[in-house]
Image (cartoon, rainbow, N blue to C red; front, side, top):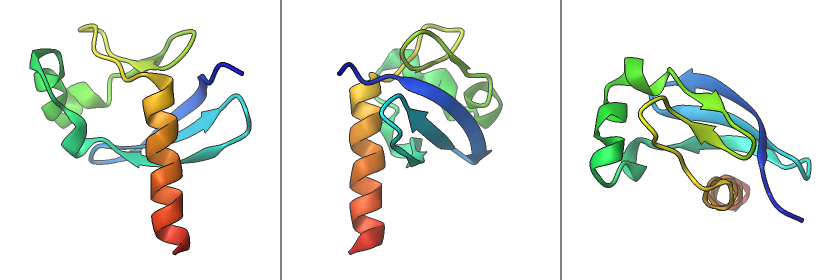
Length: 84
């Protein structure tokens, strides 16, 4: 199954609540994930809040996006840390 983000909601700071097409859901904090020039504008929280969903993932008007598989991994990693 190809993983895709089907729902995304802004929470606070650089945190998003995500839901995936396999039913997995959770929170990601992307504050430390902004690497490279395309992500520089997202360090402004107002720009970060201006995201959309395309057919697969969360994206921003400047062309920045995160692979849905990467976001899925972050959600699962966070869940494991909370569960431990």
